[in-house]
Amino acid sequence: MTADASFDRLDDDDYPAYTMGRAAEMLGTTQGFLRAIGEARLITPLRSAGGHRRYSRYQLRIAARARELVDQGTPIEAACRIIILEDQLEEAQRINAEHHKASGSPNPRPAA
Image (cartoon, rainbow, N blue to C red; front, side):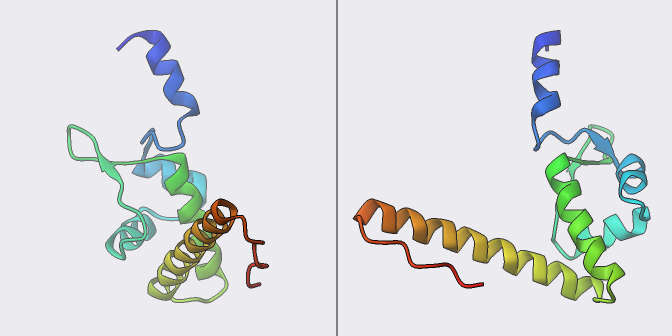
C-alpha cells in the first residue's frame, strides 16, 4: 500500500483504525462494554490478522449512543435494540422519501 492510499483511509469512517483499548478509552467506557454491544450485535468489529478487535469511527459513534442510553439507566440489551430500531426507521424514511421524489408526489412529513 502506498503512503497516499494510507492517508486516504484517515477520512474513511468505516476504516477499522482503533483497537479495543483505544476505543474504550475514547468512549470513557470499558472493554467489557464494547464486548457486550458486540454480543448484542449492535456493532461487529473487524478483526486484525492477530484476531484483535478493531473499530471504525462509525462504530464508535454507535457505541457512544449506546453508552448515552445505558448511562440514562437503559439496560444494555434494550439500548442496543433501540439503536437498531432507530437506524431501521431512518433507513425506511430515507427510502420512502426517495420513492416520493421519484414518483413526483409530495413527501409526507416524517413522524416525530
